[in-house]
Length: 138
Image (cartoon, rainbow, N blue to C red; front, side):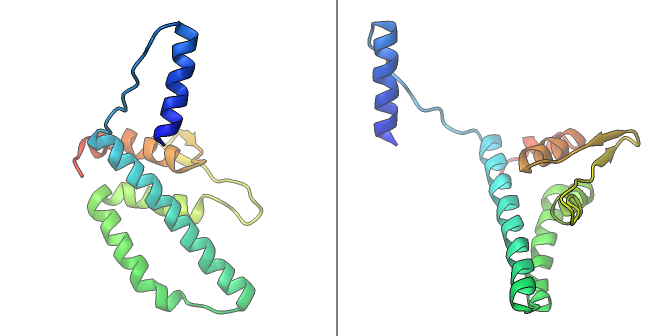
């Protein structure tokens, strides 16, 4: 990683014709929470896909076994994001995509359709509904 920073620094030095110094900005608590959220949602998506593939390819149904783990995850999500946040995350993970690949929107304020294409969109919508989520320390 340090090598890439040095290469960028040398490139900037050449462009500007002077010596520069690049400092890495420390992540704020909000940045860390957002990154943790993205990683968690991505991991959950991968777990659900894996569970579905094991069932489809091997005809093995581990849903009863996995249920306790998913219940614990659901409770932690509820503790951190409240009922609305938990419902949005559940929608994103389970109801957003149809079997034919089409996408269902979330209806916000009874009129606005919002498509959640990735965990970033999900995070932004959760923060829009409850701005305090982004401010809470981790």
